[in-house]
Image 1 (cartoon, rainbow, N blue to C red):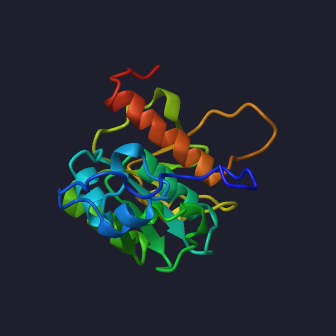
Image 2 (image 1 turned 30 degrees about the vertical axis):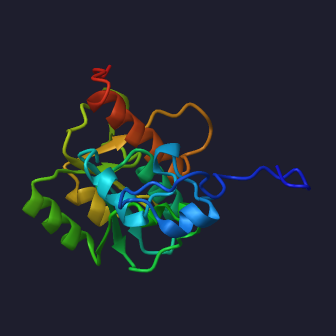
Length: 209
């Protein structure tokens, strides 16, 4: 704790003999590591962390439409990093609001597609089904759908949701059960629920209802 009682994130300078492994960053060892990373990655170089994450990334991808510079995209990227998604796909504008990502985009593969057609072509070339998430009349409940292990989970923007082009391009469109008065939930929250559903199904082998 500092004098003003503000909690300190991370760890201070390394004490004792320095480790010799190449994945350690000399600057972080000398000055301390205040990044928001799990303890196992303390003092590691950025590229070493990314390389290590690449050995355990899950087989799902996350896509977000970005036609209106949605503030939710950063939060989606942060959650994708938490669940170690294979990649995040930004569809539409190349520039996106990174504030909510809390620098987790440095550890996450980001792929840009200028249009839904480009995203669909990528899915075809890589044999990854496109799964839309929105509450359309023809949507299937996420709670009863067996998510494919290899899949790209596509989310729309806050407010309008998935574009009609994305709706039509999706192999399936899934909705998340809601019980209140609002028509839809926050896009970042929907992304977190869907990613966790994938983890429950394919990491913990929990069958769908």
